Image 1 (spheres, rainbow, N blue to C red):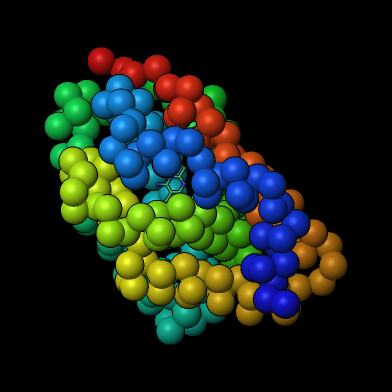
Image 2 (cartoon, helix red, strand yellow):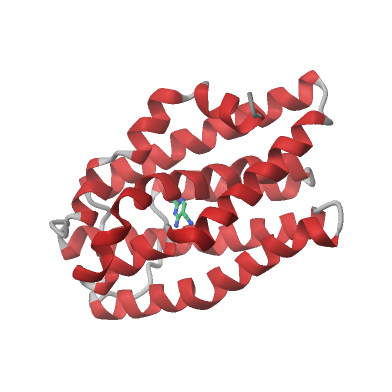
Length: 217
Ligand SMILES: Cc1ncc(CN)c(N)n1
């Protein structure tokens, strides 16, 4: 079994909860309120700030240029079209960028910062794989709905589905699968702890989004 399949199998309950969540179900059928989407995007933009640092660090720690290039290209995607999406969506939803992190956002930022500062490629990948694979899984079944939704829903689905994004997830998984083969038992345990924490935090982030983050005005 691939290491990433094994890691996911160990957290099946949180994984299913995060990838079939009431929040994303409402987002894909267009019934999610503007208020809840605004709160989610405000907090998620704070998530993305730390995510970009983590991804840049993974590029820096890739074993060679060929292994780093796809992550660098993905960094360009996040800092380009995805960043622009956030700015346009927040404007359309008539909210500013958030000034304060919710506790769920803070917990995720702390995990990403600690993965980055670990200096360990496999630990960085553990968080990156979870963050992108979870999103690929919830969004992919609903790819066809995107064009009939307001852009703040539709583009969020499109950014996390399709061939290009699926290749990003395949690449990240392969990097982690390959790194795993070189690790000893203690290092594998660290990967598993990080992966498990990241899945729990994805679930908690959607739980909080569904309850409704406080929207900064
Ligand atoms: C919390 C969270 N996790 C993952 C993603 C996918 N980039 C995101 N935007 N936000």
